[in-house]
Length: 338
Image 1 (cartoon, rainbow, N blue to C red):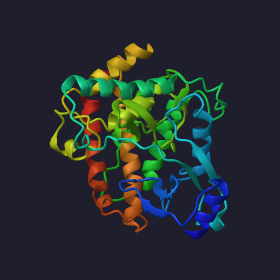
Image 2 (tube, rainbow, N blue to C red; image 1 turned 120 degrees about the vertical axis):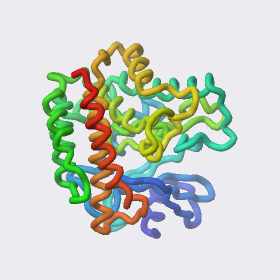
Image 3 (tube, rainbow, N blue to C red; image 1 turned 30 degrees about the vertical axis):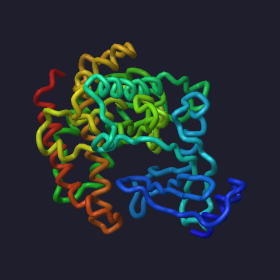
Image 4 (cartoon, rainbow, N blue to C red; image 1 turned 135 degrees about the horizontal axis):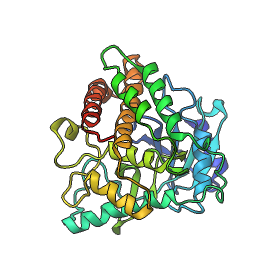
């Protein structure tokens, strides 16, 4: 890592000594490292090892989006430098300032004792930050060319279907019924076109340690683009495990959405619709899409694991998770009013 140290010191004057470098656990996509100097803590982001989907893990794009959004959406970390010289690390990467705070992961941190009303307040504040992002004027921040314009929904259904098929392994269901239903039931046009995060979850926000209701950071911008905001909400709710969900879904929970006071998925949808004015009465399509997209992401990681290109032993269970998500999609389709 000597070359990385040299690169960082060229970008950040005043750093001395060799940094302590440690990888943050739990990442299943781009890899995140803490680069800790005596004078300053920095964060380094790089692509995963092994097979990658075409056009995925574009570090320069991720850094550009964050830099453009920072002046109008203050929760974005400050990007310090981006490197595309393979001689430094063997891949593109970027470095940003660390936002120090509380990240709500599978469970609320020990010592953060919230009653039901406080938990609801926290939940609404987190949802509000996604709504605020969806209201950013992409023309003003120079991101008008980030996406491809109208037709986002159709592109996502076709794209994720293709990516799932390319990553399929014989021990996982084929999702044929799910992909066919999504293709037929997709809306004729996008609800709107705005900046969307595409991975907005509790464990991608940072809370103020002195005021845990205040969101001070939003992380992981690698999949941000211009697209339909209801697709973004569908992605978020795919991770939203509530208290009355079945045992298997509870085991997949990675954020504290089951705590008393958290909104249910239906309440989130209604709150979002009331705040934005978007029609959310027939949200079934977006719910199934979010779960299918999550399954495709899981399947891509599972394929890398089976090929020996991803090392986290937890990935061994991702095939079973994909199979469960197919069953969950099928149940929602059977219950759907569309």
